[in-house]
Image 1 (cartoon, rainbow, N blue to C red):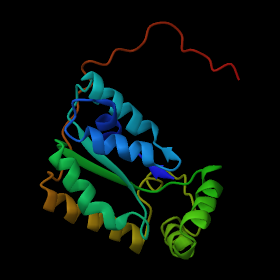
Image 2 (image 1 turned 120 degrees about the vertical axis):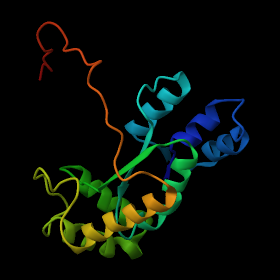
Image 3 (image 1 turned 60 degrees about the vertical axis):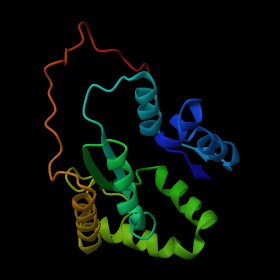
Image 4 (image 1 turned 90 degrees about the horizontal axis):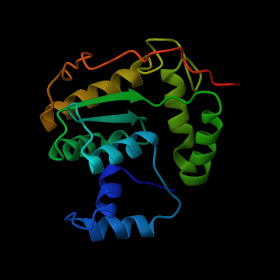
Length: 183
């Protein structure tokens, strides 16, 4: 499986993009390409010029899986115009955990135990911790290590310590009753 981020999607979709050929080739050559909702929304925003807030970079990190990519991801985000960066520790709620474990077993079985062990160390022995304040950060040595690495990489990439202050002045409460889900 190949994760396709905004850069590849935008480059593949725009003929005039300077990396169009390489991005299109990456898309076409990908075995089981996939993306996430954030990347799709970001791609839409980029293609339509919809952004009205400062662009930032967000990363979900897992020690032993994606931690080595922190500096290069942040440097690329800064070069692409991001003005802030944020991160969270990988969350595996409900049905997501067994899917992730199966993916590890299928793609990188030699790292499975290391990755799951570190996630459990950050989640009080479980793969998920839904408690507010802990679920996005984790706890303990490995969680601290991730955030220290991220902070150092942010400084090296030139990101400020704080994200920009966002305004809620354009927010308008929808009129009428809230819609029901009909479940």
